[in-house]
Image (cartoon, rainbow, N blue to C red):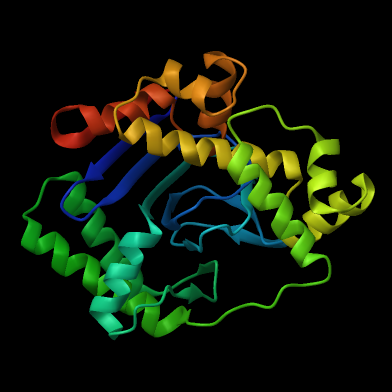
Amino acid sequence: MKKGMRTAVYDSGLCIEAYCFNGIVQPFPNHFHEYYVLGLVGEGERLLFCNNKKSQLKKGSILLFNPEDTHGCRQNDERTFAYRCFNISRKRMLELTEEITGKRKLPLFSRNVFYHAEIMYYFYSLHEKIMNGASDFEKEEGILFLISALIRNYGRFCETALPECGEQVKKACEFMREQYGGRISLEELCRHAGLSKSTLLRAFIKEKGISPYRYLEAVRVNEAKILLEKGIPPADVACQTGFFDQSHFTHYFNKLIGISPGAYHGIFSGIGKRGRHDG
């Protein structure tokens, strides 16, 4: 993998993560997060696959993923990729949404990729403020402007109905979320869901856009992030989240998050909550 610069910051006032990736070529396989992701493409082109739809990412593309939106991307040309993003937890998004709308409901955003001059301005302005250590007043004002524009243009509040085999897929997901720290076999998962192996695989991919094993990887990485945020060393986190060893853990964490577990651990334990990872 070619060298690239990756900077990660946790803003303890806003309770959000901010990332800046420059000069990277790393592909990201299909995965999901437990939080909202809002990103902006600075340079380069990529093919994005999100919820079984393909989109072209170019300079100025804004990305918006709801929790559990399945997505992955890869380079579309020889140029390196530059990308900024915010990760916003469900809890924080709920607080922001209630502040803005008066409704204590999580928004479901209707678009994953779009261009919008106002949102781009608010995004870039807030990202620069966080990276440069602006005052809490400026940053709080900035995030409210940004989320307000997102909700106004792309937000809605609704529940989605379970599709065919949706209940069985839901049971399989719940089982993996409960047992992610141990060894899980496909046979055991199918027995819990009440489906045959072939039926579960077809239904799971149709519903989630990824295989059950890829889903389990994502669950483990998301749980690992929580433990790393608490200051638990990466080696201990690897054991607690079901990975074979620290090398296996580092490989999957970097593959899905874009930085190493050690670098992520560092942004919560270092001065200024800032971490940089070159590679």
